[in-house]
Length: 330
Image 1 (cartoon, one colour):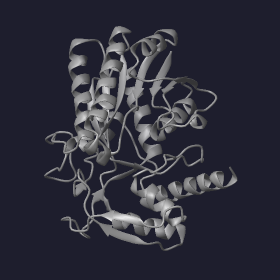
Image 2 (cartoon, rainbow, N blue to C red):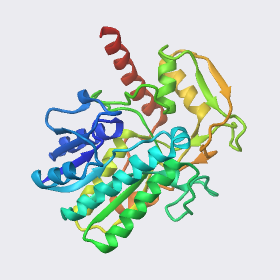
Image 3 (tube, rainbow, N blue to C red):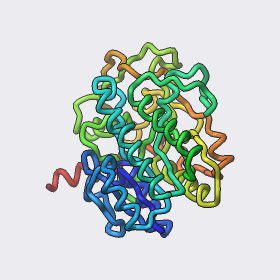
Image 4 (spheres, rainbow, N blue to C red):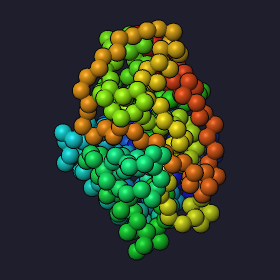
C-alpha cells in the first residue's frame, strides 16, 4: 500500500515526504508546483504534477497506486491574502478539498489526515486554547479550513472514512539534516522573514502592531518545529491504521513567544543586528494564539523532540544560508 501526499513539494509537505520515506513508506506525491519546488521531491517518491481539484487525476492515482491513506497539505496559507482574495481561498482550500474527499470516498480510502489550522479559533477568549473552544475564524483562510473540517466530519459519519485533522499553530524551522526548508519567495512566516533580514536579503523587518494586550505589545504565537509537526502526522497515520476514531487535535507546544522574542532570537543566532520597523496591524491577526497541547500527546503518544525556540531559529537560519549560497551560485 502507498500514501498519497498532496502539496508534497511545498514547505510542510516536503518534510512530510521525507519523514514517510524515512519510515519505510511508499509515497505518491501530488503537487502542481504553484508554490512548491520540483527539487524538493526526493527520488524515492513518485511525483505527479497536477491539481488536487482534478477528480479524474486523483481517482486514477488512488486506484493505480493502491493508496490506503491521504495526507492533505495542498492549499493556500497566507492570512492577509485570504482577506483580499476570499474566493480564491474558498476555491483552493475548500472546493478542491471537497473534490479530494469525494474521490477518497469513491475509492474507499479508509484514512485521511488533514492539514488544518489554529486560525479556526479566531481570537480565543482563553489561552492556551483547547480543541473544545468556540470556532470563530476571523479570516477567509481560517473559515476555508474550518469548512473542510466540517466536510470531513460529516463524511466520516456517512462513509467508512476516518480522519485526523491537525490544527497547526505557527510552523517554523527546517529539516535538521538540511534536506528541506521554507523556500517560498516573499514568504510571510516571521522566522523566515527575520532570517532573510539577518542575512541581508531584506532591508528591514516590519512588526505589525505593538499595541496588543500582550506583555510587550506584539502578537504572541506558539512556534512548532516543522520536524515535530510531521512526526505528529506519522503518529496520526499509525493511529488511524490501528483503528483510531476520527478526531481533531491541536498541534503546538503549549507555550508562546512574542514577535519581539523571535526577533531577538534571530539576532542572537545570526550574531547581527538589523532594522525593525513598527507598522500598522494586519487584518486577521489575533493578539495571542497558544495551543492547549495535552490532547495530542494523550491520543497519539506524540512527544516533541525540538521544543526550543533557539533550535527552531538555528535550523531556519541554516536553511536560509543554504538558499542564499545556492542563489549566489546560480
